[in-house]
Image (cartoon, one colour):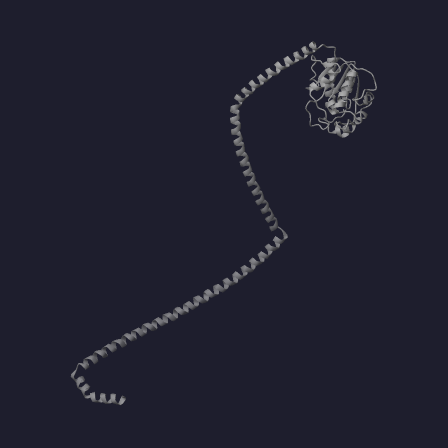
Length: 388
């Protein structure tokens, strides 16, 4: 799909850039002869070519694996193709391989044969600028009609080293006497596909052709832009309530997401608790837990026996305390009786003393007692002196 190495000042690709890996990574379905997608795709292109040009012969310049050549052959066109990729050409099946060749499009073909139609699909952008210009000259030498498609904007593909706009290619073909067929729409192949034909055309005729296309295209673009603008305004007006509803739904959605996250967090917490409980249960049901339970049973039995013994001791102590209380009650009762007896005797003695006191008081007031008191006064004095 490209050409031989260019001068150091130009970036170019060569056959090694289109190895098996290149076709393996090709965009779309697998780029194989068995893939139905490519058979249908190139079959549709071949049908359009036959309908527009009815060629008896055709050459596909930069044919890759020759899918378009095969489709044209199947429809009765004497088709051939060439490509710089040795990998692509040598992998062609029998019957097709003989019609394909490894070629450098920047050099004239070895055969001087001319064809009713030459196709060149997504090739020139892979070539160095000078090689692409020579390739255009060679394409024009092979036929009076060239169907060209070369991307104006796919800069992402690493092998696209020579992308130009349609005007640049039109100028290159015009230098060979080829001008655009404005009456043929090549967009069945790609949005930028163009049909160039060798024509003896005057400048006024050429200007008329281009202006006719340009005028209708410009008017169409204007009307479509106006229609698009009107549609946009209608869409904005109609979508205003929907925008409000969308914002409300977005808020509701955010609330639901928040609730979902909260529930998820709670769920995770419950799962963690469940896992912890399961781990604890597993630990409790393990051999160590069984041994611990038996130890606990032994401890409980020992505690129960000790409690029973303490109960017996407590019951015995209660009985002994009861007997001692009875004994003490009897002692208290005995002492109480003794105390009452003493109180009675004391009352008798108090009565006797009070009687004696009354008798003594009566005696002291009598004349006899006083006379005796006077008679014994010297004796009392003598006793006191002796005690001194």
